[in-house]
Length: 252
Ligand code: ADP
Ligand code: MG
Ligand code: MG
Image 1 (cartoon, helix red, strand yellow):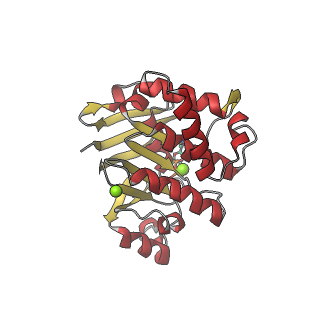
Image 2: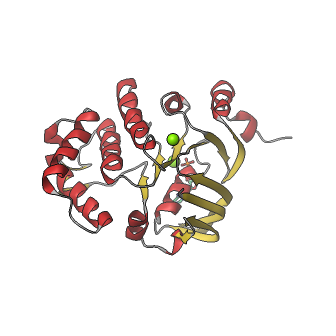
Image 3: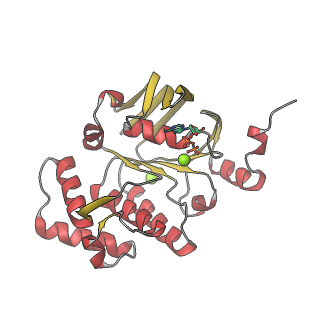
């Protein structure tokens, strides 16, 4: 069974006023077959956690470890992390003008597998993935993320997830800006992925809405750069009813 293990992770971000500590000791283990939700108020450091796992250069790990099946993820380049089986869908995906979705997907798949996918099955797989996510076949000829609507960005992300087929997926605010139909479509894609053998998901979200469609095995409440509480799916229901007030209110 695959294991992604985050231990006592401390991360600083470089700002104009110098380094600022955002993550203050995060410990979390995700095993293959598990879906974990990280929920928390805005500014609590959820995206910082995603970027740190992804290896974004702006975020500096000052203490702690991230390992994938015992291998040091933090020592890996961004490409190596992808080849090791990590997939990161970002809250603010970058535009890649001049690179079509089809080329982008094929290049990424080739880089991860170490060989080009077989053309015939690949084209079929891409078309199936796009169709299942309610994206027109012509979508594959558009430039990556250029002029994509919020919904198209998220659908494209999940098409990437399904085609690249990693072991662990970190999905940051995959639900933001989606209407109810798009939310269902995107959730179905995530559920197809997690139904496969030994796949793990870290689902980062501010709102509980997506958790009605993607039911997590574990819920972690993230506040001020730390996990403040952990539980099962019932914790998401409690948050839906009560919000984050009890975690963020400053005691007199
Ligand atoms: P969340 O995703 O939970 O909303 P973030 O990880 O985006 O939280 O941000 C956590 C804190 O770190 C915020 O106070 C934010 O302003 C700060 N922060 C994150 N990234 C940067 C950055 N690149 N430069 C400056 N401050 C940042
Ligand atoms: Mg499962
Ligand atoms: Mg965020």
